[in-house]
Length: 162
View (cartoon, rainbow, N blue to C red):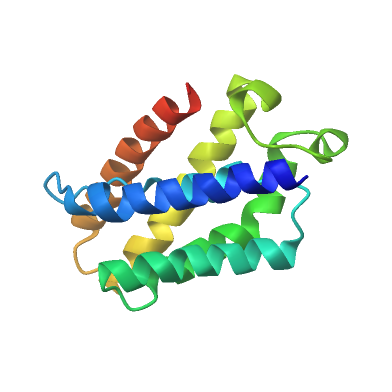
């Protein structure tokens, strides 16, 4: 259990640093890869909902502090942390959720990627809706959500291979 905690804590630190030091500086038009949500995707299902919400909030708050955004990442990651257990239950049988570390190897290709796509789209939609705080330019909003989600999913796909 301690080994698993240390492994996920290291993943937390590495992905957070990757997001802040490298990815937050990359802009492809309006598209920014946001892979720090992969931490919430990978955290074991044995983590209590309270800890998961706390982890989601802390992760988002740390990104907010370093990206000079007023709580938007914290709100989006807290929402993802809140809905994650329901999304897991939606894609795999209840008896398989016990002691599950969500990975492509443990869940299978299709269920895992449905789960990942759902979480990434949920996160990016919440984040960019909060950022724009309006539907003034829905096309730009869609470009940001879909473009960033596709780029994030590509990077998560590469992470999942290692």
